[in-house]
Amino acid sequence: SFLQPDCIILVGREPVSKRIANFVTQSSLEGGANLVMLGNDLRQRDPAHISSHQVVMEPSVFSEVARSWLQGHAEHDTSACKVYSRYLAELDAVVSRSIRLCFQRFDQMSEPLIAKHISERLPMVNALYLGNSMPIRDMEMFCGERTSSADF
Image (cartoon, rainbow, N blue to C red; front, side, top):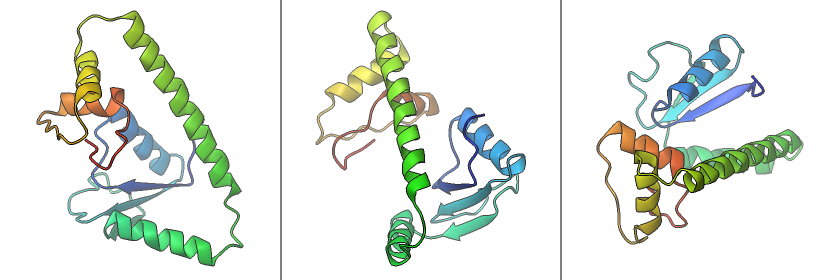
């Protein structure tokens, strides 16, 4: 695997994606990555007992604490983070382009295409509730971020 993290911070619930869950597990068990689980309630969140740290805290509070610490410790080189961030942005662009091309080539009715059309046509002032895991995954996988705080 190209991605071999030293540390993974898992915010909120466990990943819905089996691939991501497997990546986190393998990185922790075989790759030696520290797994930090961050959330409001961490009960029954680590059935495989692979986390190295569990933090019960609002993610927004954690983000502010981390930002404040980094500003106070300028001696720490964050250039590797910037390189990694650019790498992830490039991967995201490649995947987004591939998905967009697939939708253009195969314009037949499918669950991912329906999710894409709904997300593009839903007014920003509206909310959409999804009750099953597959539509949730379709929205998460095939529909880009919304441009306001009213995300799915």
